[in-house]
Length: 428
Image (cartoon, rainbow, N blue to C red):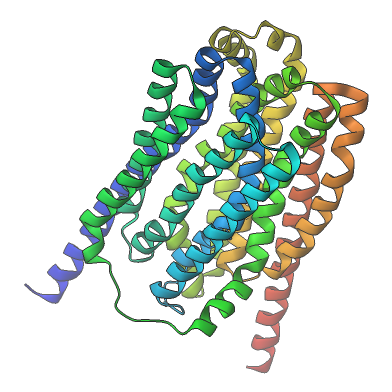
């Protein structure tokens, strides 16, 4: 085979992998979006509103703690195309962070709610999600090595199988506590079986030095804080409702928020498969090409959000029928606000990945510190004054603050790059 034929063969293979990657990533994002809505629906319908409310607060707590488990290192790992850190370092760092996540979940639940069913659900759900978080380190390795299709396929399976078991067990037993124990056991088996089938082609025998774990952690700390702050911001209104309103309103707000969070998951269809491609474009010095691609993704996310907001009344009717909570129809305005906020959240997450690719993670500290401080103050005030609608508006306000921060920082960096290029031309 000639060099030209080999090059053509390689390009065709990469295109097939990318096409499969888009397909499986779309399916994975879709099943994740459906699951986030479906699990709460099943639990509320078959285990009761109280179990649904307990799951709602468990999700609010664990979604924040998951960022301790993953340290938001996935974006860094898959864009580490030059392999500054060997897989062994990513693996050990993930083991430590996931262990810390579970320990914090245990002590937080017992400390705040005492010994009881609510604490048990929070801890069990924390373990359930910790296993999911641990798996990401393997998926990151697959995508780093150019196999986004395998990473996305396994991501699809690790969500579909355990969550399906969780729902089926809840329907049969009508006991969510028992169902989640069964789901955890199934999840462990699923993770081990499917990764063992493909891992031999991606394993790396190189061992990293312990000091490199510290270096990696330092580098991803801005990403961790970004994700932690984002998760807290997303759930800050839930905490305010937990403190100032009854469990019934917690359930209503959570149901209204679920479609808003799925906007981010749908946006993942668009940008996740191309993150490694963007990293390569950046490393090749094609700044303008990357800028154009980023703007196209931004436009696509905003367009998707606009379409979803336009059909909000239909979605609300479906939610009311599905969950059997008739009070939802009273909150049409709040629902529209939440959907818009969900779109801005998707945009903010994408911009955090872009800033990671260009290795300007330090900007995230500024953006998220400001937004995080606002999240500590705004939700309580808005919830006390406006109830559910106030909670929705507080979330939208926080997303607007964060979005402005991202675009200001990205604009500042673009100006700095332009000045550097001009200075280089003048020297020549």
